[in-house]
Amino acid sequence: MSVDARGERFCDNCGHLIAKATRIFKGQEYCNTCYQREFPPVPCTRCGKTARPHRYSQGPALCMGCERDKRKCIRCTAALPRAALLTAAGAACAVCARHFLTPRPCSRCNVPSTRLGRDPESGSDDLVCESCLRRADHATCSGCRRYRPVASRNVAGKALCAPCTACPGSGHTCATCGAFVPGDGEGKCRNCTERLRLRAATTTLAAGLEQHWARDLFEAFTESLARRKELGTGMVQRVQRSFEFFERLDRTFTDPKQLTRTALVESFGASVLRSYLLASQFVAGRGADDEGAVQQRIEQARIDAKLKRTAGRSYGWILASYSRYLQRKEIVERTARLYLHSAQAFCEVALTPLAQPWAQSTLVAYLKTHPGHAASLTSFVSFCREQLAWGVEMPPRKLWLDRNRRTRRAIEWLGKLLQQIEGRALHEVDPQLLGRILSTALGLASSRLEAAADQAEVMVGGTTGQISISGLEPISAGSRIAAITRAWLGQRANAKR
Image (cartoon, rainbow, N blue to C red; front, side, top):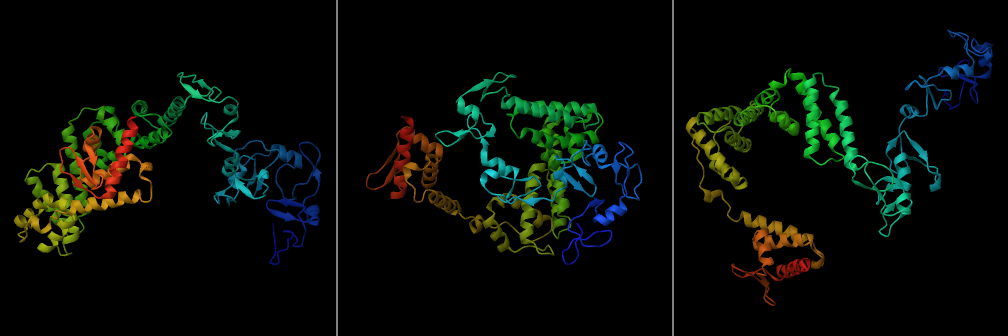
């Protein structure tokens, strides 16, 4: 529609103001005067009726009826006697029209959509999306587990469809495997349905592989995956994700005999094999190769990747020299990788841009926060002292080992557990949560505490609040822990009745 600066509509041919267009042709609007002049009447070349083509139009003159008869949807090319939407490129059918509309937000969920409609039953003229329209009267039936219109609700307030309302508890047998399927009808069970979806997806994906052995290998993988894991709604997505690995195989190898563990590691690298773990394990398991040699190559590839990432940093040359030092010491690849990981983490914190020796206090401070790196850093300190002639050494354990660290962490964890039961009646708390609280507070393993409770070896003092466990000294845990112990013992006793 052509509108001037004042918002008034005008004819695109003569410029005169109009209330409505007499004819719209190729996006141009014509008033009645221009229509009579620009579209002279001529006989239709097909049916003989009056046609009004543009005077400069090329091709046979057709009336409006014949134009509609030969019109096709610009998207699906279906015959289109009645258009649902007219665009500058042509007409679209009712199914394809939504692909040419501008998404607008739903008035309920505010999600943009091109499939908006009105819900007269709600008494509102607001445009809502199809999901919101269905959600008003559709739900998953609690009887047959199908998404259907809600006919009624049971005593628990759960939705029931019309067949389950008429005959509660009805069911039928799966025509494929004979399993019981809730609800009426002749539908297959969930396992058979997912198996059909998996088979269809496998056939479609396998067609995209060029070599026949790659197609056979992919189909064998999906069959093995279906046998190993329970079929669920995510199985097809898992197979689609694994298909990318078989595409790599199809492009890289020409013979299935080449698919050894060594060849996979050398061609793709350890990171790619981990990304497609199920598929790579299946393919590698079909070839003969030395497992130990494969693991060595994988670990060496991870070491090389680490050295490559740190090559441009100030301490990169130190890690490279340290790696060669570990090789001369004949340290196995996995241990060497762990040593390099600890060394890199320490260099990030301790070494200056000039990569000079660190102060002893720096190493002490690091070990206080990372005590688990002490064994690995011992080798790195020895390397720096022997190969770089740095005057560094491992500090004594008493300078950095915090013997109370485990106790403090247990107290912090106990505080978090107690916050979960704050203000709640103890008999309503999950017994597993109470068991974790007692295990943390008393410093006992859960299995040891449960075994003592089963043998009636856990007793709580009536006034003192002491907790006595057979084989251990009495524990003064306080009144709160004593109350939790009584509640936990009571719950376990009730569960056995």
